[in-house]
Amino acid sequence: MSDSKPVAIVGAGPVGAVMALALSRKGIPVVLIEAEYAPIQDQRAATVHPPTVEMFAELGLLDDAFSEAPSGGLQSPIFHYRNRVDNELVAVFDVDVLKGEVAYPFVLQWEQYKLVEAVVPKLEADPLAEVRFGWRLTGMEQSEDDVTLTLTNPAGEPETLVASYVIGTDGFRSTVRELAGIEFEGFTWAERFIKIGTTFDYLDTDRGYCTRNYFSDPDEWLNLFKVKGEGGNGIWRGIFPVPADERDEDAMSLEGVQRRLQNLYPKDGDYDIAYHALYKVHQRVAKTYNLGRVFLAGDAAHVNNPIGGMGMNGGIHDAMNLAEKLADVWFARADASVFDRYSRQRRKAQIDFVQAQSIQNKKSLEEKDPALRRKSLDNLRRMSENTDLHKQFIYRSSLFESLKSANAVE
Ligand SMILES: Cc1cc2nc3c(=O)[nH]c(=O)nc-3n(C[C@H](O)[C@H](O)[C@H](O)COP(=O)(O)OP(=O)(O)OC[C@H]3O[C@@H](n4cnc5c(N)ncnc54)[C@H](O)[C@@H]3O)c2cc1C
Image (tube, rainbow, N blue to C red; front, side, top):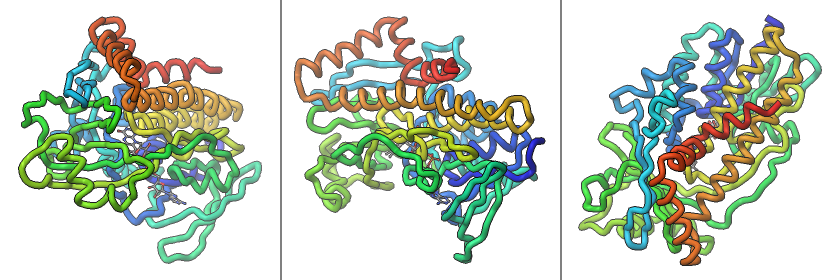
């Protein structure tokens, strides 16, 4: 072992949790630092693409991920593209076309907080890992040999921690990124997105929806997915755009939420609302993912709109890539130049695939020009009806292609 000071991972969201587990499984001591007092019920990500499921397998998480209990995920191989204007079913894609070519030919709908809740007890049982909830990073100084972190402990007092390396998995507003002075280049969309969860079961309607649906609509596009929720009976999550001129309080009001669901599928009585939240949406990538002994991964390194479900997946791919390289340096199998390769590889995956694809997904769902709209829908149908194109589409949208092309970068 090259260094006995632990690796500090700041932020116990899904990426930090996976990062800590991946490193401790490789024999590297870690301290996972989280400002919140316990894992929070973050209802953002749920879509887990097949290559990420392969990574869960590598980390021994499949018993949790595939559990029949409410804490497990929902296997969802099929997804629909629909024209919301007339409910035309435009294209049906089935990840199962990759059966025999990939290990897990389905998308797993598994809420991100359930992933964190599955990982934390494994870390707490591991002598190489320490998990600190209620601790916040406030300062950071690196030397050639280590990084000294200033933390605020749960009692509100300052304490220091000396780490061999620091990994910022502390989300969009990353303190690590800010303290390291790394630019976060990109833009913020004018509209916001609202996520509304309801216990109403859309499979009981006459619409023919499946458990993952993308709706194109020049007035109000929509993503509608099913997750297991807390009790296991299922929650349907709709993600809708909120125009720039709609006030936050109107979008978040009970009337606003009911109106959006009633416009989608009119029914007698109010919808039962499990949760709703409004999000600002960004497309940004950090200028570098490494600076000396400091690294960024997950939302601290990149953010994108959630259409296609790629943000958390890309972050977990960062974590697995970085864990491999850090272990190689830790056990003297490689020198520190591999860290630049981490940044090159994962920035390529992000810029060429996740950013490009998520922007394209948004544009195609919201297209207002009728001719361009028709062309985009016809193109989706054509891809879904041809086996080779169908497979190509799934390899790209599931991020297999992004991993392959990024890993080829020297
Ligand atoms: C509506 C919506 C739906 C989405 N759906 C999907 C999806 O289906 N699939 C997908 O792949 N992605 C999806 N995403 C994106 C996904 O939610 C994020 O990419 C993911 O949460 C990033 O995880 P993370 O661990 O990098 O950061 P976060 O989940 O933001 O976690 C960061 C953690 O760091 C902690 N922290 C922050 N600052 C400090 C500090 N100074 N000290 C200590 N701790 C700190 C925070 O408390 C937090 O727990 C969606 C996003 C939105 C908005």
